Image 1: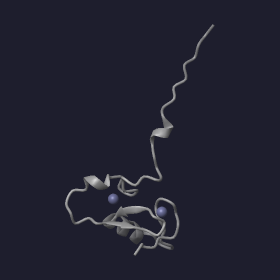
Image 2: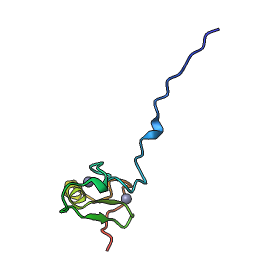
Image 3: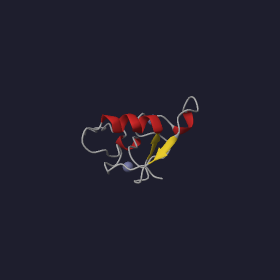
Image 4: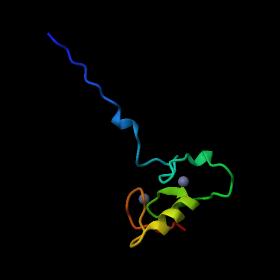
Length: 78
Ligand SMILES: [Zn+2]
Ligand SMILES: [Zn+2]
């Protein structure tokens, strides 16, 4: 009798969404940002990014500006 062991490389270890500790654009932890000239900003979809990351992202959008995480229209939370 042959026994096959299937390799299962944890697909579930990679968390893409609902992660409040890492910037969804540069993947850097919010707590490990070098320098203090990088404020965090929130969108109305409640996703959070580094200010310089979201500005760079929005600048690259040609038509509609949307959140890189959930694809909703991006609006800065006041
Ligand atoms: Zn970032
Ligand atoms: Zn979002």
